[in-house]
Image (cartoon, rainbow over the protein chains, first blue to last red):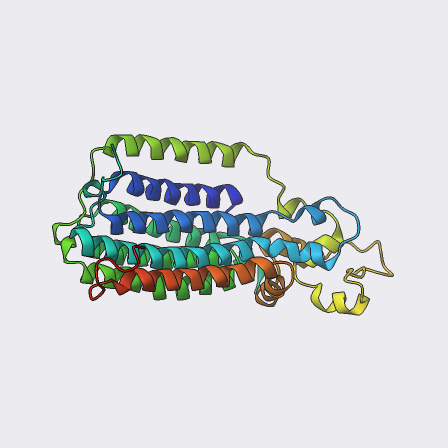
Length: 116
Length: 226
């Protein structure tokens, strides 16, 4: 298990999610594929946090506690991404419900009023 | 924890097994026509990602992943699927399927090429004993001892001492010992503004969701024109 391996797995999951977003018509499927892409990005963030040292540690000099703490910035980023993704999915599902109530459909190909 | 366990086979094998499971579940999510089964496989892949976090020494992120994704997002999606009857005809692929395969394959190729051709600075390349000691979690008590946020020399008085075999191996295989309290400190110190902003974003999405879901069934048509 090296950084490259984890990044490869993250890239595969991202590509699968991208394929889902591009190829599905159902908005709920789109949302699920989007969540897969979010997860892939979070894996990459945590992997970088795990395998690479903060710049302050790598360039030598006095080691301060702030530099050491910076090693966990990736984890903080991951928590932020998860929070935003959860808010986004709740809002997206509300939008899908509104769409279903007004147009009786959840297929994106049926929602094309703004396309000319 | 003994080093042979951390460094070698078992963690690696668990990682590849979990990765295969997660990728298989993700493929099921994007190919199954039955959306409800797709949602179940989505929950499975969320669990797989959480296990990958645990294997990457990110316990806090793994627990948050299980709480938020497996516990909340999956349930939300499952309830939505059950309440929208339109899903009975399943999720059909659209016309751009081959374009989608091509684009995803290209993106994956780009990510793989970059990941393998970049010369990453790795934890295992650190040479400063204090940096290694800091990364392996020996810094927490020392920080307060020095008072100014600077880590005291852990090998003070005996500068010829190299970091122990244990510390070197932890630097290559492990990271900060106490990650959860450190993340808590980061959230309310360095990242307090983003942290508060996230709270605002969540409240906004909550109100937005409620406003969207409330509907306007009983309201007169021309009410204020807006």
